[in-house]
Amino acid sequence: MILTFLSSLDVLAGLVLIFKIEWLPLRVVLTLFIFLKALFSLLSSLSHNNYLDWMGAIDMATAIAFMISFVSYENSFVHTAGMLALLKGLYSLILSRGM
View 1 (cartoon, rainbow, N blue to C red):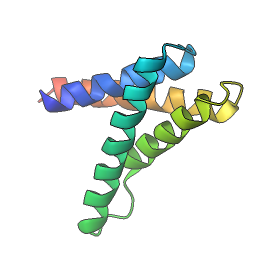
View 2 (cartoon, rainbow, N blue to C red; view 1 turned 180 degrees about the vertical axis):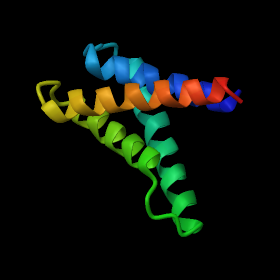
View 3 (spheres, helix red, strand yellow; view 1 turned 180 degrees about the horizontal axis):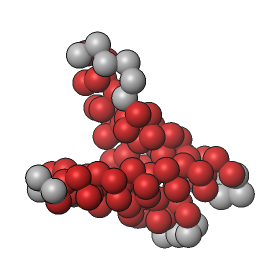
């Protein structure tokens, strides 16, 4: 259930970045949630000596893209991070449904 929620959050974040949705409260909340999720993922992976956490790295890139999007959406990094977040969210959503 939690994995499904977090995967849906990634899909939503990817769609917001790709389609340049400008509703500020949604973007602020997504920025905070994605940043905290990335921080928790990276720190927990590092504490277990796992130095290749690609999902946490994509979360951090998405959080940085959200921070950049507050200034301007006209950056290819924002669009690329949105695509990566969407693909990671769909991948995680498919895996969470299979369990």
